[in-house]
Length: 396
Ligand code: PMP
Ligand code: GLU
Image (tube, rainbow, N blue to C red; front, side, top):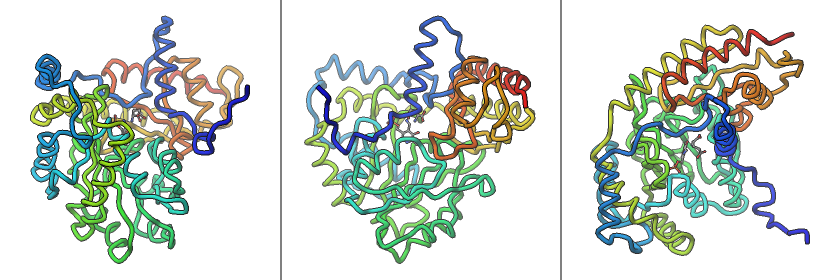
């Protein structure tokens, strides 16, 4: 019998980052020595204190339901962190802890948006934003930020995208996939466009700790006038290398936080109690050596890529991605096959050189490819030399 799918899920595309990673891992399991530059997942271990706190939670019976929005203890610790590190005043009741920041974002769009609403989404964007916005019933209004502005949204572009239906603006700094980090002044200038508008700001700051020689600032700290219309999203996956624990959170105006807690109480209930206790310990156990190592890899990767002819690569200030423009090579052939898109470029790069990268097509930026350096330094060096060999093999 042919199954009928709901309209909601009929056109949903699988997450490109997750599916390329899965494909790469299955090639590796089959014995292929693939250099996996696809997924954004720190190759570091969970901080020891967090791991032990997780074990202790299991052995001491902290294995039961918690309040749906997370334990009060964890929400207090997150509120204290937001005050200490980000200069943001939130009460514990304004924090909703979920099963990963992806889940927090999903709750956010569901709580904010109705059919007919628009969410302004600067491109290049992380793959899950447009799908989550559509699932909430709203329409993503994609605004193209270009290389010329370091892939950042400008106040002019923002102002031009606003309509009477605009419900929210999505900001992501440091950015996935470009690594761009907005300065305090840039955030202030964007905020000023919104001062007299009824528009919310969803600011995804999950890569906040991963910046290299620049300062990361929280949107609501720079534009305090918009505090009651800002939702600050963050999580433990990147800063604490805890992707598998699934722990993220959103700090929101009280009514929205309450609504998201209710929504979550019906959908998933609380995030894992074990992960919550591990997260509580992680907050005091940040590892700056991880950032220093990412910094070193970024430099090697970017300098290597900049030396390859026909590859344009900006130096990103944050996250753990580089996003080179490879469109110079569109129309060339690899093993007799024409490269007609970033998707084809990545397929042929994987086939010929066993380097896994994510096509810019998935991030709304078809001229680029994304390479994650959340992998070993050796992989970073090997990826550069394989890419170099791939490019020099291309024929007009
Ligand atoms: N936001 C951005 C920009 C991301 O790259 C990711 C990727 N993991 C997430 C949110 C979600 O992270 P998680 O669900 O693992 O907390
Ligand atoms: N956010 C990471 C990435 O972009 C992990 C995969 C995902 O959740 O999309 O690669």
